[in-house]
Image 1: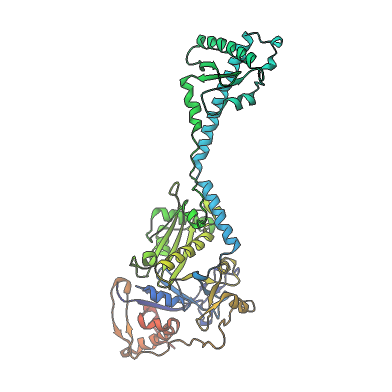
Image 2: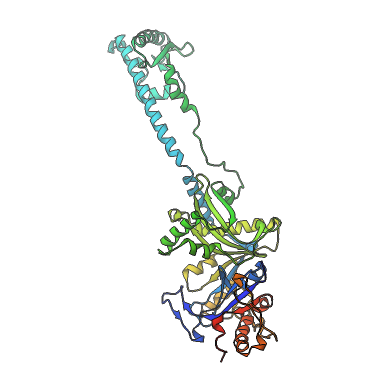
Length: 513
């Protein structure tokens, strides 16, 4: 803990990562890319105010694009989740995900099916063997054509199965249909011979424990299986287990998805599991073969935002967290959202997923889920918690333009720092890459340019070694610092009054010209 401290860098160059030309920004002042600084011990209120000045962070590095002079202007974009209108395509994403998760959660059913197939084959084998026993008994009776074999009611396989397999231990055989007396005579003779044959068999080849004529149904022989065969048929009586949740009317689809996905908020710790997922994602999606656990931790786990745990606030705390997505049936981690939870909303930092589950479209779903969770938190705990900050919108970049699919969203005007409906802002961007979105009645931002009489210089804030010097008594420091301090105030607005300011030593070697 301690004061919020800025290690101000000023204007910096770099490569554009959004256009095909990969334009490079160099040393000339009119070729700079961002205003940049390192910030430490940043309250979430301060960061939220900076987002409203078009700043974003990467760990403790904060930057503000110089939109007026770069090739791909970057405009902050946000969504009021209380007004969100889900599109048909977004509803399809949810439905498709639910269907795929149901399929993923049934790996055991394949095993069950294999077991059922094996069981069915054993059942069929027993049925055919019993049928052969019956045919042998009929042959021994010499029920040839003279005795009209047609009196036996179509004892072909399908009929036999239909009449016999009711998942019971009795196997009826209909004889001499329509002629009750003749049917009973034939049935009694067959039973006598069948039992005689059965007694001559050796265990465990015996299949029939007993046979008798059904007195309630003339011409029907009931066969009772041997005890060691009973489980084979009794097992099939049991209904197949199903892990599919019961569909209830009016149950939100998100709740049904949560039956298959365990989604939970966790501290932004760096773990081996998370790093392996990130590494696989970077290699597959960004073709990055040079990741490291240290780099991952610095990029997506470490945060300069001050953390606060409070059960009474949305998500029970402020600061940087990870939202994990796990398959419930095997606890496999398939995705991670990196989120900054602020006072009035949630800033989506990054999302990475397991490439093996790319077909689930978890990137699209994660935004929909964040909206859903924010709506719940907003309703339960804080009505002002309603803005989802989606990073930057770049009008001519497909991978950044998709964010406008979540409507009705707003873009930050680069000249007034006021939020304007995206559908209005794009009317300007369709004509030119940079422009003013707000109406002429909104005043243009001029920045806080009044310098204090006394400036304090702080060094090495990360190590806690704060050396305070008065800049007004050191002409060399004063000239350089006043130039950078003016830029600091201008780019930070009123937030600059709440942040301790210092410059890197290499910026103080020569006075400003």
